[in-house]
Image (cartoon, rainbow, N blue to C red; front, side, top):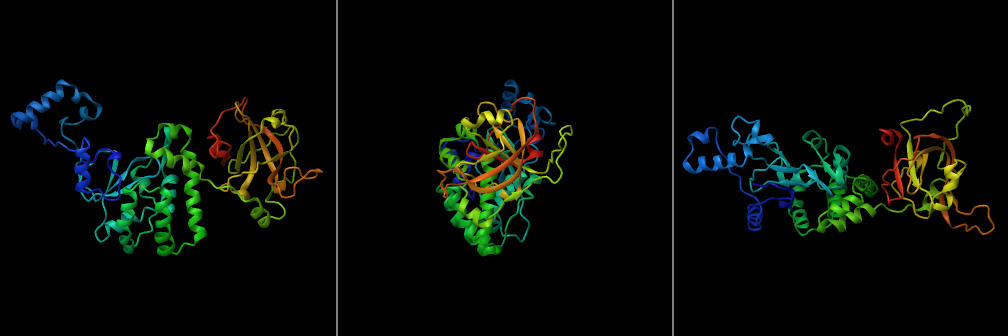
Length: 390
């Protein structure tokens, strides 16, 4: 039996892996009783069941709703196993040992004619990992859970030829290679060579996975993680790359976006908020706080570091995050462009590039400040108004 996710650390769960779990003291055997065993079983069976009743095992929720509390329903052997709850990334494992499992894993039955090894290894790529993050749901501590209907929606770049990669990737997982080391190999083989993805498209898939995973894995997750996972989680959260302002300037020599309203609302008119628009939440420096408290600020300069995962051409709203307070006020980003920190001043450094937002106060979103988690570098959150206010 394979009872817990920590008992599998490979792409292929073998009988040798099961025997190692037994040697490590894991609960790896499954005792199966047939209906009526309490009345018709041998003396050892009857004594075992009676001992369970004396301990109150039969009064648990799952046991109490069964016809015979000691009979496990739906015992089936599956071709593969998909772990239900995961931390860094969901695992998909070939069940070579023909092990039974608990409900901590989903049983996967592979259709006849499909190469099992090719099918399983096809999952290990940046695009499939991104799909898992999009389709799954988050729980406390950064846990990612996928239910069967969600697992079905994960894209797999399946090809029979992928089977030749199985042993290599299985070995990398067993040797505890990092997710990046595994994906550097599989992305090239599965996506670029196998499906014709360009290097740019592959990097985009990895960037999407980084961003979604980074939102899920925060400081609380790191504190609760197993020691062997902490290093990789810390790298994953910090892995969002820095934007190259010079490259942005080459792409957008004028404005990145221009959202200046054609018709200005009257002072008495309550401004509408477009729930589909993107909003950037940013921690503001302590020496600029006063101008945000009274909504008098008209311009926002980013620091020297800005995350490359933010969709610049979709910038629309801006919300300042006040340290020890949170968020409250909504601003329109009228203009977003590349500029310099001290533009127009005698001591301006023409190479000190920053993003410059020309902003205008729209309204208070909340009566008082509301604390939130800043998902990127503990400094930024890039989301939509509907996600923020749901």
